Amino acid sequence: MDYVGLACAVALAGVFFVSVRGKLGGSRFRVFVATAGPLDLLPRKWRGRAATAATVAESATVAALVAGGVMAVLGAGRAVLLLGFLGAAVLLLVFTIAIGVLLRRGERAPCHCFGVRDTPLGLAQVVRNVLLLALAVTGPLAAGGGGYAAPGVVLAVVAGAPIAALLVLFDDLVALFRIAPPRDAVGNRR
Image (cartoon, rainbow, N blue to C red; front, side, top):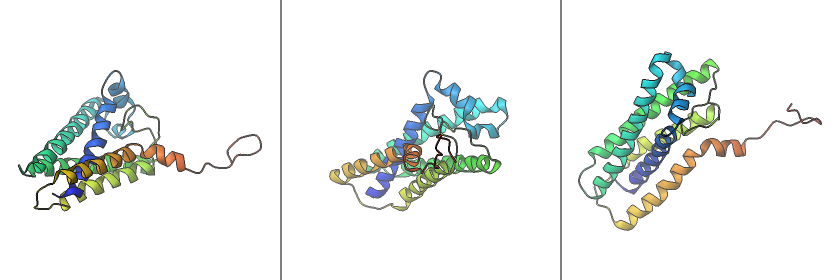
């Protein structure tokens, strides 16, 4: 695994960490279960279990990416890191398919992927997940056989962290650059 793969692992671990953190604590998990659009595909009695399973799987993915990255840097093998990439890819594929099904049905309920946010589902979430999926596929493909130098590891972490931040804030960035429809003289959108 070279530095590009390590940066991919850092970015994915950061995104999944923020996702898990946004669902835990106080009423956030209850809000996630009650309102997350993709959970509407399931019968009501399974939503809590599915939300718990997704959160546990995301947590396990973070652990595998972080522990696997550390193990790879220390020369202890890459198997755990590869499992982290595989877990991320599977989760992202499932999430993207669920969002796609809902969008095809015309449903745009908020996802609450990163906590209590009211951004309705749309193409932005699909694009973000495809970008994340590209990281999950690129990481293992960037595998190299060499060792790691400390400056390269630091650079990989420094590169991966802002990528994670940009992907977590992707909905906000899309909204920032979205062109609003023009308004008439009274202020109503046309």
